[in-house]
Image (tube, rainbow, N blue to C red; front, side, top):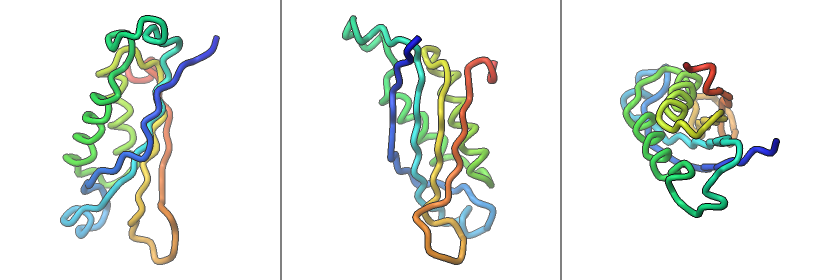
Length: 125
């Protein structure tokens, strides 16, 4: 069966995730990408917001987690985002979360360091 997806890409939030005291104190920008998998989205036929996932609400949930969290690792940050999406949005069957850290405290040139995880509804219940 085909699976419909909702994509939220390049969301930028200022957060305080990191191992080092300066990361906790000053924070930095994180870039988050989400892929929500929903099976068939009824709104494709109904054109009704109640038949899909409100990506504005998902954006706000993600922002709250990133901006108010104090995790040490982006792995934990990604896990908390995935859990929130699956718990708050019952139409989502599974989610992929990528958290990018462009200012990671690594001596060298790079675009970003990142972690990407996938979680299903069954895993969190």
